[in-house]
Image (cartoon, rainbow over all chains, first blue to last red; front, top):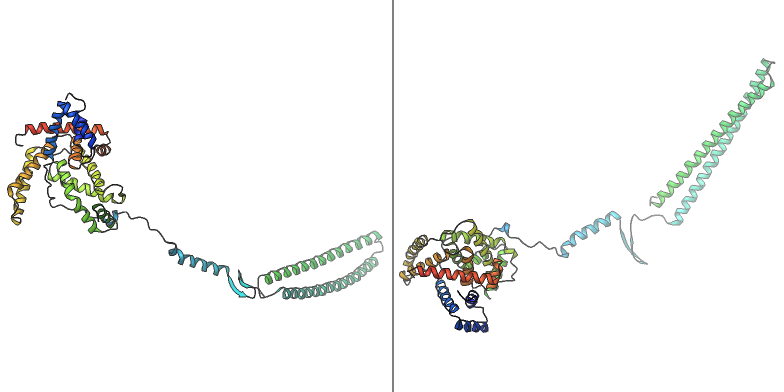
Length: 225
Length: 195
């Protein structure tokens, strides 16, 4: 093969897709180049010989079955309306949990959350006022009882002290005035402690009263009668 | 409906699980694939094995077929790759004696079928099989690369650009390989006094 164009020329010539103007150019070259002309003639013969192939019938064979598990289907797509029942169920459950109440009245549609209160503001104030009066009366009674008890205790105490002093003075004339003063002082200290305990009891009672009022207010605000 | 549209409809039905559509698709192309396989494998047994692998590869990848090219082009791309894989795994049976012996068996089988087709000329059948056997023998004398280029150019009518893309080579390399194969075939034909 003397001509360096022979390989591509023969290949192009046997290419059915070769444009006509290029085929004319190849024809022109082969007229000038005996090497390419001879190579092209041999290639055409060989090509024609190969094309004498006759299609042979397919013998019996096991055609591959279509395995369903290997066919890949596109992923399922949910339409919006397929989510509607689930969304409705969620909304209903939420309404039940939040105790939603929808009502219509003179002011139009009203939506309320939580239990409806059965008391209005005036009723609440009246109840609180009555409760306050009741508590004040109870406090006054308790205070009077404490004062009466204190007075009685003081009187008994003074009487006992006088009796005790008379006995002691009577029994020993050698008892000095300083001892009498010390005795009175100790009795006074005991009185003070008793008085302090009484006031502490009164203060505790007041604190319990305040707690009762707070609990009542919370119950009323929570809708409990 | 055109051939391509029919292919597309069969592919869609097969992807939806229709065994009948898949069977029709296989029957539509099995003759082309079998003859392709026979020319490359050189004997019926290997050709059937290759054909089986080609169609297995087709249905495994059917969901990837996008319809950008014709289904037949896509199918023969798979067939080309399977033929290369098979050529690497086992040497082809290319001796003329083996091929002629196998062709003789096939002719005998055809003659037995000809009892039902009286118009068929038994000598024509014999001639057809002997001619095919010689072509298979010639193809078998080529290297696997040359054989594939000849198959794709002569029998599948691909352009050199398409062959180059398939084999990952340049178009000029494909042309040179094709010309070299034709020269080799010409030399073998001249040695074969029977043609």
